[in-house]
Amino acid sequence: MRLSNPLKLLIPVQEIHVETIVNDVVYSKLLNFVRIHQPICLVIGPNEHFLKVLFGADSLEPDTYKNILKQRYSHLSKFVRIGLHTHLYHKYSLTKLDYDAQFKKMSEGKQFLESIGLKIIDFAPGWYNYDENTIKTCQKLGLTRFHAREKLYDLSTSKIEFIQVRKFTHDYDL
Ligand SMILES: [Zn+2]
Image 1 (cartoon, protein in one colour):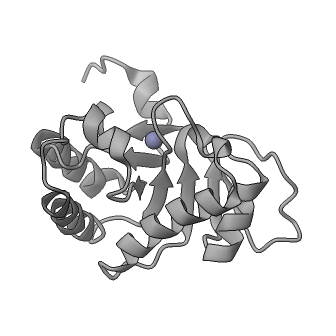
Image 2 (cartoon, helix red, strand yellow):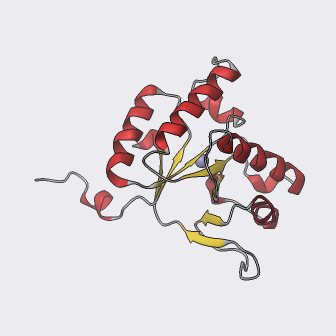
Image 3 (cartoon, rainbow, N blue to C red):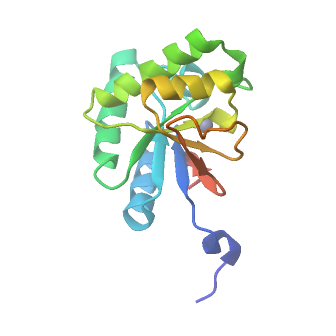
């Protein structure tokens, strides 16, 4: 068998940032992938407006959008572990927000996922950008598995486990 890109296959994808699951083609590819590889899937809440616009889902009514996310996340959770992923808006990361705003955003996302019956302890910030407020928020929300490229803070006195991410992909890149 000839492999078109052997390197791509050698390093397994640790996690997928799920941002376009509302798209049927993306959803179907994602399901195929997770059935075989079982990476953790970090998913966004319904409050990530810029992503909704960016991926052409802006015309969907908020409730319709929410219901599609709920249904698809719930199905996805039968195959893989689900965590929370969040963004602020395009080109900006959570670090532009103060503690209260980060807390609001992340707790909304977590509550949404819990409303489908998922237990959420994993968190990956958008573009892996974060600051001390992000860590503080994770502590507060019981998001004890923190996924990022680099460990920027000493977490030894916290209950947070640092998960170093070497390879991830987006659902729309599968
Ligand atoms: Zn992302």
